[in-house]
Each structure stands twice: as structure tokens, then as C-alpha cells.
Length: 265
Image (cartoon, rainbow, N blue to C red; front, side):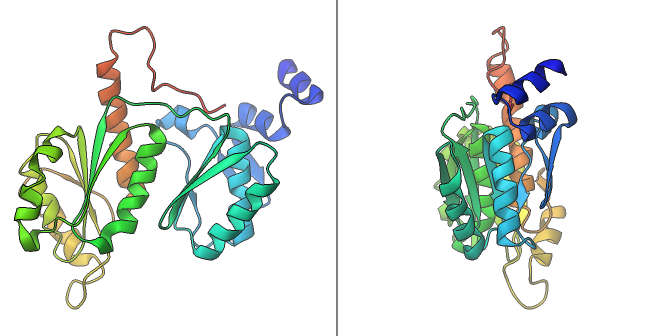
């Protein structure tokens, strides 16, 4: 405790960083940010931008950047992204921002991303599934896993996915995003021996539209797979990250330290 107070007094530690050390979270006008989730759960806190004002999103991102060195954001609108990008100009420590459709990852110049000896294949049935798959990808890339993106291989032309069988079989975990009737994850799960995580996407129309038929089909899959909620790209990416970390631990089980056991603070 005294060391923390002395560090704050001398300016080497900010009050927000001290609060994160003591409480595990930081409170600002926009809400609370869980700064130690990655240490507890192996996956970081993400900022859900949907339903928040652009200023609130920027404020939470600044808190995340200050306490963990990076901010992971999902469901960003163009307006929110513009305000976020503008707010980074006021950050003393130069930060970089990467955007995947409606998701973004902000990193400070001193942040060192971990590296996992594991590959996550992220597969889409069609281009409409891209933004949901992007949400999963940003989580996996932030964790340090290698991502092999395989797009537009829906079952309307089965040869498209069969042509990618070797890539799919090389992955340690596979995420498949599909709308309509949601058949692609079942097909992929029948081709590989790795865990498959299915994401029903809210595409399609008519009876069972908005992802409902895809969800039902995936839950009834005759091949073994796991299913997340409709459009839940972040959840799928987080599940894949936990699997990738387990694969990485096995790969480095002979080492004294686990390179994936990084600290945000």
C-alpha cells in the first residue's frame, strides 16, 4: 500500500493505475472498467460501444489504455470511432488504433502483446457474416493467437469449403460464422478434429430469419460443436482464446514460464 502511495506521489503511477492495483477495477464518469479481468479469466475486458455515447466510449477507452496498455472495443458506430480516434490525439503516450468493421483495438506504444503457439481459423459462410467474424478476430489477435481467415465458403457451393479442408485441419480451434440455415459449422465440424465454435448470424429473411433458423440448426447439429448466441462474435473469440491459451501451455509445458501468462498492469 505504501509503495503504491509513494508511486502516485512521485508521479510514476497514476491514480487510475493505483485504483486498478487495489480494487481490480477503475471507476470514471462513464462507468467501471475491469482492469484485471485478463489475469483472472485469460480474456480481457471489452468495451461494448453499443448504447453508449461517443464521449463515454472514448472515456472508457482512455481508462483502459491507461491501466492495461490497450483497449478492445466492439459494436462501434462510425461516429463513435471518429470521436475515439480524435481523443487519442490528446493521449501523451502515442497510441495506435486498428479497426475491423465495427470492432477496434487501441494499443499504447509500450504495450507488448503476448504470442500464443496456436492457430485459430475464422470462417464465414458469406460476406454478410464478416463484421461478426471480425469481432471474434480482434479478440483472438489481441490474445496473440495466429488467425487464419477463410471467407465466403458457404454450403451453397460445397466445393468452396472442401477446397479449404487442409487449412481447416491445420487449425487448433475453428470459429464458423453463418446465417440463413446455419449449416456451415456442421459441415466444418465433420471435417476437422479441432474444437468448432459456431456463431449464428442475424442474416436471412422470412421464416426463421434474423439468425433464429441458424441458431436452431447449430443447436441441432449432428456433428459435435459449441454454439454461442446470435451475432456473439466476442464470446466466440473469447472461447477460442481460452482454447488457444491451453494449446500454448501444452506447447511450452517444458519451459519454466508460460509466455501467455502476461500481465496487463
